Length: 144
Image (cartoon, rainbow, N blue to C red):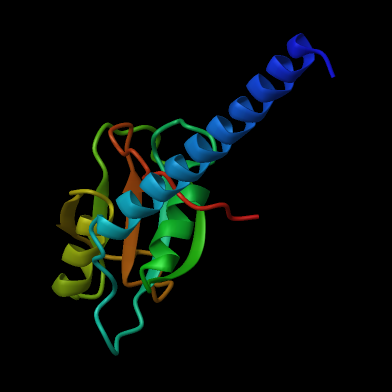
C-alpha cells in the first residue's frame, strides 16, 4: 500500500469517527434539554378532556401540540383548525371550572393565557386550547 493511499484511508477513518462523535453528542444534548425542561403534567387522578385548535395558520401545529399534551397526561379527544380564525396569543379555555388543570396546561404550552368559558355545544370538554402564532412547540421526539 502506498503512502498516499494510507494517508487517504487514515483521513477517511478520522472523518467517520468525527461524524460519529458529533452525532452522538448532538443526540445526547437534545435528550438532556428535553429531560431538564418543564415537566408539568395533568393533575394526578383527574381525567382532563381537551380539544386542541390551530389558530396560528401553521400547518400541522395542532397535531404536534397534541403529541406533547398527551405525553403530559391530558386526554386530547379532538384536534383541528380553529373556525374563529387566526390569533396571536395562545389561550386555554376552561369550561369545567378546573383551574388547576387549566393552569398546568398553560405551563405545558409555555405560558398561555387562561380564560373561563362555556361550551355552547355541550361536548363534555374540560379545556379547549387555541394555539396562536406566538406558540412555539418544543423540539420533539419522532412520532410516526
